[in-house]
Length: 341
Image (spheres, rainbow, N blue to C red):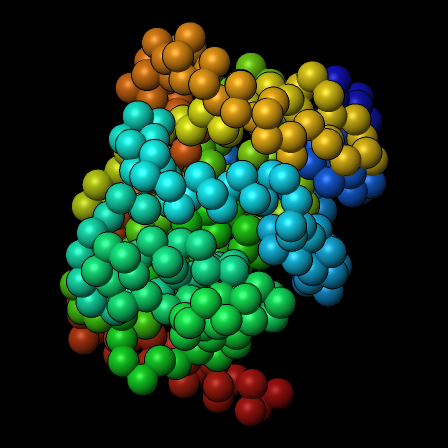
């Protein structure tokens, strides 16, 4: 229900600055029990969506360190089950059946940077598949664990990261939606890639049929950690604007994402952690139930462009000399203006 007094409220899009109409109210954290509530705004111009209000960086940092991934959970039955499954011979077969949204089936060579590598689960897989895998991770605790596993992990911000050698592949596996400035993230991803290098992105699809079914209980609202939400069209336009060429774009719906949305719908309450999301027996049962009995709905949703996850590969293209000169010229004008005032 939209409050009558709030129907005409607008906010500015973090991408293009156009007005955003409020589309959904009272969206709450369905995972950890964070008490704040948020709104979802939709941009009338570029079609992206974002949470409102935008959380301050300091608050987000504290929340990540308290709750998120490695910093918030270690040594539980759920994490043990997850680690065992990822390292088992069953995992590659499961990816074929369920869909690979983390690029764990990709084989190749060259330098690869996993942005937001956490404690290095993905790095182990990329290395096994032939890549010289490195990570970028701001969570010092998670980065230390990845380093303990033998990986080179950089802990500076992306803006301050200047590698000695450019990368062949940059991976943003369910990372871009977390950024308070995703356009800037894509700019710097372009900067650290070799000419012709590849950018791999996976992120939730704001056109997902599961979003429509579960409403504010859709697991991928994931407030306040998921800041921005893309459609296939909006993400493609943004990438083209940042000098990437789309190579492939698909939509997939992992059974675990559908299971998490169902659990959220059944059990999540504002201000309380949803413990069932970390119950390996419940998760395993629902994953297989969904994959077997809801296969037609999942397949149809993906085919119609309403899958839960966008999986995209793009290639860095050359920026024309004229374009570069224009950027330098604008920068000099801006510097001159700042000096005058």
